[in-house]
Length: 603
Image (cartoon, rainbow, N blue to C red; front, side):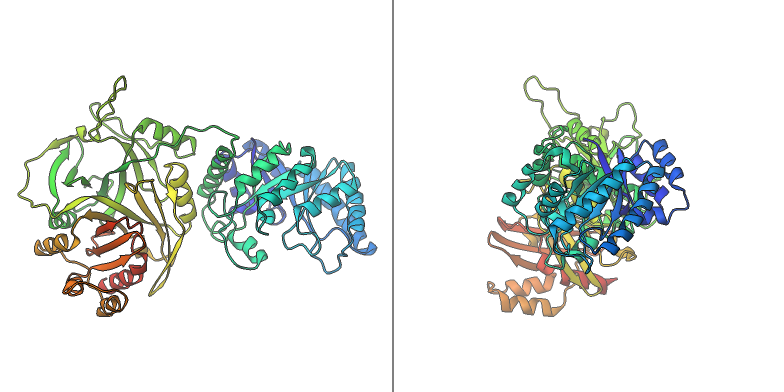
């Protein structure tokens, strides 16, 4: 279906917004009145600019406080409307949005509202314009879609229809039964459909709407269910996003528009309106890649953790360090970032790397260009919103009968003489914790859900001494891929972009002792933390004292127990040693404030 984007959803000038919408692949836009008023371009210039960009102008909005008002007030409204209709003719827009009135002058009189909307539609028809009447969730007298439709139906004018807005409908708590009434609206009388999601919040609906809307799939509203009802009613117009969001208004317009279009692609897939390449869910973490201008600090840390340097890339300055099934690449090439060691890439085990790349590309995550020698394995990589490269790879994958063998990424590496390294019990990569730029958190969650097919858990807020961290984990079904996506407390807090790699072990105490004996430094914790543990849990004799000595944190849930500790940070990377007992599913979120405070103190 055609897609459209309200200009209010993006930051920047109107010209910047139109360019971003076009480049992201939208077919049309809604022109928000404030964007037009602030633009130095004439309506004719804007019309020509949209045509050059391949964009239709699907809606002009909004007109407010029109209906059910005293005669003298309505006369003023018609004068205002005439001016707007003339402007829309210059702009080339043929549909105007009229919101249900919030004016204290508006009467609770459906007959009067219908009569005045009929007169407005008659004037609009003279200009070749349609009027789409929308119920605001906080409208003075009309605040539900079915009430708005009854007024439109009573008005009975061919140039008057309704606009359905997913936020205004779903924010009032409308459930599946409430949405069934959409079927009573003839499809041709649904003049426009606006879509928005939002996190579930207990707050005033006007403030919720004006500050916290997000793209479909990023919140908790059943936008997919509503879309199915609207399509079943016969609506064939554009799917348009109208998003009021403080973060989006400050973020760069281009990436936000791409995120917006991706959300509509995923929404159409979920509603059965479009077929995309099926998600190929990763089955494990094959490797993480660190980039650094100086390999010595990272190598020393890996050596203390019990990793051994086992191979080197045949044509690039990349070393492979391994312990158990945990693999870390250390890249000292010219692309190494100036701010020290950082996590640049993740290799995701995939049963179908080419299929995973096709899925990513269909969702606007183009495959990254990659310099490789003719003999190098043909590996596909895409960029996550934070710039982390995601490789879809296979490790030791034997071909099934009749199937081609997948290229093994390790074929690009040549074995080096083994060091006399003693493994410390690390078995694999347990999870990754990737701190996102503050304005890309929701985009990152949608990306990992839609492109990688991972399941998103509920969002968690974690306090630290300098603000609030927000975190949301995504994982596959068996937990062999776990990624905790987070955002720091301040947009300018450069240190908040530290990433960490959690390594699984069956005995965190033994691994921590071996790490420390090899010269590694564990993060020290305040004594108050372990004093509180003693009050909350019962431990075996000497167990808590061991945790104090090594800086081990402890948590438990209904499924099992979790013990973990942290190394000091090298550049922007630190490691976590974790032991999961039973079927513990979390990440020790209760302990995060203590860890964050300790890391601040250690800087």
